[in-house]
Length: 169
Picture (tube, rainbow, N blue to C red):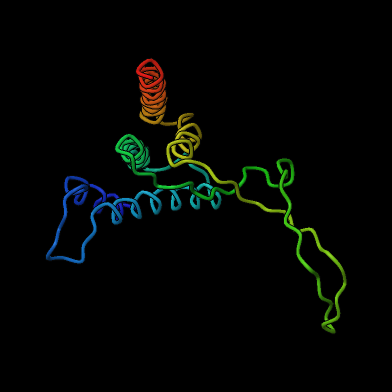
């Protein structure tokens, strides 16, 4: 996670620049670093708990969320992340239907396979992780409030822009 955070910090200033003589794509590197940080934090939470993590982890998660919000404000979209459901048995709402085949290869009819992942924005995923860490880390609670305010401001700006466009018509 530290490695991916270093990549995010190192390449963030170069997002938006065209590096003609290089195969490096700063925006892609930062996007992948954000996805990796959030995926690693989620994996750690799945295996252990986020209550006793290093004090740097809330910072890494917050930086990832702020980058994703900045990308959305700039017109780029990171796309949704796949997040494991907290309680896959209680929250199953979506099922995938596949054709089933028995051990002998014969068709056995449709089989319903429950999905255990949901698609969620990077900022929302970060907020859910920070909420879990917040019970033991004051920095995580502060970061969660910061993100909540940034998300609120982002949607407020979007509504104002939409209103301005409607008034211009």
